[in-house]
Image (cartoon, rainbow, N blue to C red):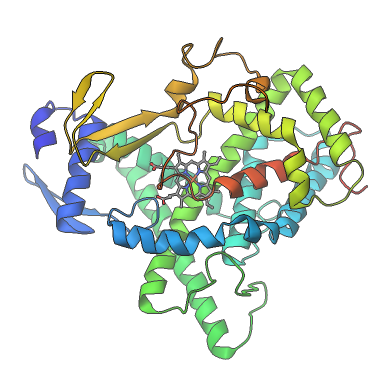
Length: 392
Ligand code: HEM
């Protein structure tokens, strides 16, 4: 309410609006009603990891998931990362290059990241590179809906936008129904003591492990089903696509990277987790891409107590916004900030101090940070200087 009073009645700042909605969700729980003139709006906030407001609930989920994303666990996923990178390279080589066809890299890496998350998190084979599916479009539509909704309070009231809003609702429904179906399949498999064809659900898949599938587990899974696809898929795909774009613009960086890949990987067919640690320049290139193009450019945190920053008093209770995008482009923090220069992240260079946080900082920082980096790096290894596929 305070935020509403502070804002112009015609167009609410998305920040104030978020603050207001966050307060409401905390006070009234996951479903609440807001009356605006004669309109009744029902707000539903789910409890996926990114959006969980209740600390206890978040902490419980995060503890389970931290284990699932640990480096010990990620080691075991290298097979899937390698396999999907290989499929992408085959597609690029045999289909696009051999037929001299233009490849839309963002679409292709979207398919691969989707495949990887579905496989390692849920044990499901989608094979998006070779089969068409409504999945990528549904995720894109949900994200677009989210952005438009945050930008403009009255978006939903303009009849011009109603067809798009129906599309967003349909996309959300599709994602949740698919999630519910996967959970149902899993339960049936557990009940029958077998693993259905095409749905190999051994307990080491991220989201099934440690879950007994109580009603609460099911809710948790469904919320996180959407969370992982939204939080983990597009972000990683954007990172890879933007990195490819930068490499195309900077042949010198590409050459240096190829040299490193040749030296570290050579003709080896599969990358091991330990190989990744040696791909120092590739990691610098990815970091520099994230500096200029952070896939999550803004994050927000509610201040519990009053705080003074740079001599300015900020009262507790307000929502503070942090932008990795803005910090990453400030001359004060990065000299000549618009120049793409991976050597800024050379191991001997001074480390950026609290001005570089593409995965956010603190306890609510990105759960999938290592996962995303391993995923991006294992797709980088195929691009070697001899132009061959890995292993051929
Ligand atoms: C380049 C890729 C990625 C980037 C740049 C990124 C960035 C971020 C950022 C900035 C946050 C904090 C959001 C906030 O607090 O407002 C976050 C949270 C989160 N991310 Fe990522 N992310 C990436 C990939 C992934 C992947 C691959 C997954 C999972 C498969 C994932 C899962 C999550 C989850 C679950 C959270 C919420 C953590 C919590 O609140 O405890 N992310 N991510």
